Amino acid sequence: MEHAKAEFILGRALLKTGDQRGAREHLRTATDLAQRCGALALGGSARRLLVTAGGRMRKMSASPLDMLTGMERRVAGLAAAGASNRAIAEALFVTVRTIETHLTGVYRKLGVSGRTELGSVLRTPDIPDGQRPGRTSESRWRR
Image (cartoon, rainbow, N blue to C red; front, side, top):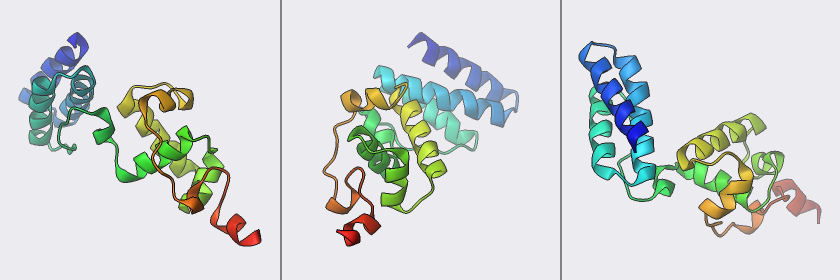
């Protein structure tokens, strides 16, 4: 909570001095930290200043899972179910690098350090049959 407050104060000060880019960085961090701590009032204030500084961010909610984009949720769900990055990439028709980027965002937003912690933070969603771990659209047709 104290870290979120410090980031907010620094972001607000940078915004007042005209450093919008620096302000956005600290205000985005303040918003993320505040939301993880459940400090929705502080997070809302940081988000409003972030938007004032030209940044974009989803609306605040009580659940950190709501911070994930649709694609991040799909990737996180597949990763939590045990799929490798390559299997996820093939199932979603994207590159492995794209999956790595999405997972990095998921880890940051959920405050986890890696794939092993996803299961405890994220409920694995129902995964369509064609997107189960280790199966690609091509492997379905070979059976």
